[in-house]
Length: 208
Image 1 (cartoon, rainbow, N blue to C red):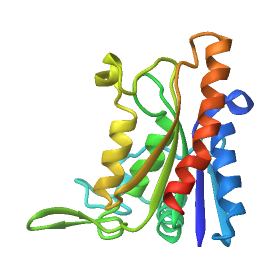
Image 2: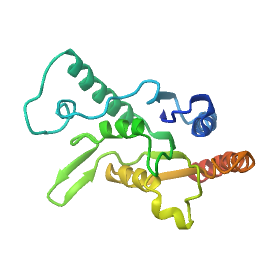
Image 3: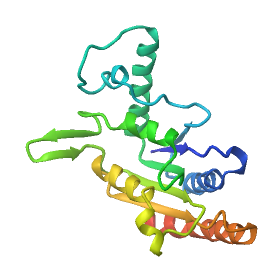
């Protein structure tokens, strides 16, 4: 079995989600269930955002595809990204909230995953996800408090991620949250500690 570990915070060693996602992967590997971990840092090794020629490598787009070595490399990245995803049983994603949604770097990675015929299929009844059976664990960090608060309507981060993976056929999406990160150092450390405490609870519920 394989873990796919994605980090998407621009804060590098100061990142809360990087700390927590690393701990999730550590605890998962200690279960002995997994043979390998594939790691991708979409900030350090950024994936280019979609253009029509890039998207033409895996979906129909209007216009003529422009060739060249650079485009061939982009198509190779699209294949590699989706192959890593499909080969993995569990995804661990560090996903901070930026401006009420995900980082643009994470969005670029997600855009490469949505490949018709590989991760979803168009049918007469509508699109059907083809990537079911996986588990996604998302480490979510936010400057404010959004979960089950009046600000929840502004949360386009977790809602988007849950719906995106549901579109690909994945129903098992769990969140480990560290909120209030911008509310002062005491609040920040309290919330990070609470998130670390949540990790074994989530993992035990997934793998009793």
